Amino acid sequence: MIPVSYYLAVGAALFVLGLIGFLARRNLIIMFLCAELMLQGVALNFVAFSRYHGNLHGQVFTLFIMTVAACEAGLALAFFLMLYRQKKSLDVSVWQAMREQGMEVIPDDEPFETREREKPMPTLPIAGIEPVRPEETSHV
Amino acid sequence: MLSGDTSTGFPLNWVVLFPVVTGFLAVWYLLPTPRRRPLVNGILALVVAILGFGTFLFHGLGGDWPFSVETLLFAAFSLQAFTFAILMLAQRNPARAALFFAVVVLNVCGLFLLLAAPFLMAATIIVYAGAIIVTFLFVIMLAQQSGQTDANDRSREPSLAAAVGFVILGTLLVVLQRSFVTSEADELIRQSERYSKSDTLDSSLKEPARAKRFLDDVVRVREQLGYSQIDIPVEMGGVVYREKDSNAVEDLRDALELTPPAFGPMPGMEGRSDSRINMAEVKKANGQIYYELSYLKAVRDGRIAVPNAVPLSPYGRVFSTTTPDHPALAQPRQLPGANIAALGRALFTDNVLAIELGGTLLLVATIGAIAIAGGRREKASA
Picture 1 (spheres, rainbow over the protein chains, first blue to last red):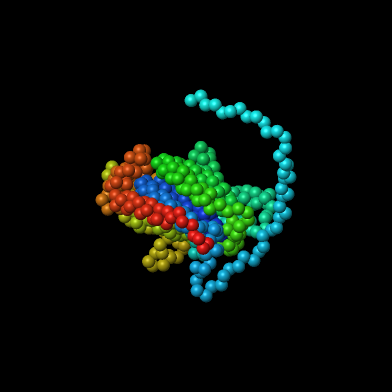
Picture 2: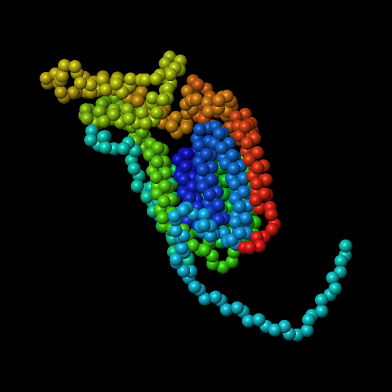
């Protein structure tokens, strides 16, 4: 049997990766996925302790985490759709009007890398005779 | 004595820096920036991060890994979960991120299965990898964005976010090491076992300074293992009873004549000889110390049920139905074989109110989601 500390280490890693994603990413959907990743890390901790202590309370907790996460997902995605309808963007930074009083707007300084676009393929004019297609018959 | 005073009790293992540094570099490098970075370096950073985390798993927690299928599966699932979690948070395309999240969930489900939670594994796959991911993909496709966007191709403070995250990870891993690595206790157990079996006085017990340090270590480690909270059963004449305080350390101290005599050292008697020390007493006291330390460590490892543990449920049902509890004979604590039946019993005996509240929450969330997203009218002034 693998000791509980190894599972706790994996849970800690998943939690921290979710935390970093939540802090650094700007797409609302990816931020929400990262929050779910943090919940996965916590659920792993609960199940590991359930095994370690030999009772099922940890698994019960995980079931409730799943319930709450499902509710949260439904509500949050509905919110995202509403927000997207207002600004046509999933970027959280377009909602900087909701920042605290006295804070400056954070500008995006670094320009995007300009890459030359691929040339579109040449289009050919339609020529020739249209081939005759047999009429569709049904055998129903 | 100075070394005994300055040591923190548990050795700090520098392996903890491997996953922290490599993971920080990889995540910082892979987070999206307006300038695209070369893919090869990203793959290299990811491989290095996996190696760093794997090194910690194999060496950082002081475990000797048995070469078994369980070990292989654990390593595979945990490293894959780590890898795909990094890939997920580094993706520019949210649809791909959702799919990588599904892979992470599948790997975590594998870990659930290794932890004897088959029902949770199935439920998590159905709910997460099924329902929630499909909902995400729906929203991603409804809110489709094309081309380079601020949302997908810029990160907010990637270096600071990664630094904060990996400092927290380092702290958590150090705490895990300090509370779960018991190499010092193992060493003391080994020593006391050796002392209790040899018929001659060990050379390290002959020196008063080293013997004192050994006894101080025993007292400290025994306290760290929860000596004052746990009753250690003692068998005497076929009857098992609990003993709160044994005098093994004092006995050994007396036997080794480490306690200063009341009238000061007698002239000419400073150097002790083996003949004056009662070897039977030394062996008996060391045997008792060995037994106490091994029992406490077994309790800590979860191999023995704590006989006087308080049941977690106020009604005492979950404790008595899901764990074998024989107060006199310490049994290993195990989860019941019928996972679903026991889980259902735990849910519907001790957590009925929470179940009802969870159901109500789901209903309210459904109504709320419909109310928020239901309107089809587009905003005219957008």
